[in-house]
Amino acid sequence: MAGERRLVFWLQLSFAGDFLLAAIAVALLWSDETAGWYLLVFVFLRAVIGAVALFWIAPRAARDLGQKPPPTEDE
Image (cartoon, rainbow, N blue to C red; front, side):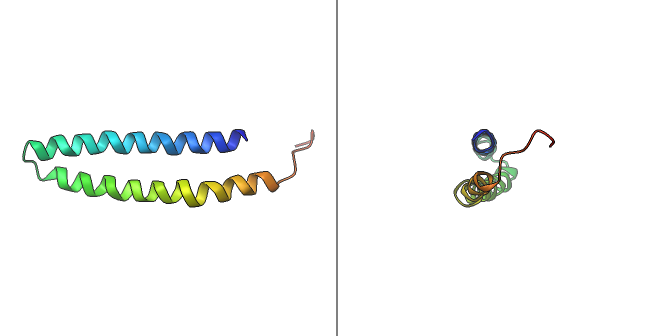
């Protein structure tokens, strides 16, 4: 269960970073900088990849973690 929580934490942190980058992109667009559009497209692509990771990869990883036998003392 700790592995699942760790994975979800890092995915949520990624979304928080995307939100911060989107705010910077909006500020750039507000000041008529073309770079804001490029940053906004980059943030959109990161958010799509993060959503795929959250809803498709994370459940599969959690299921795989649950199927492995617990480690022995020798490992």
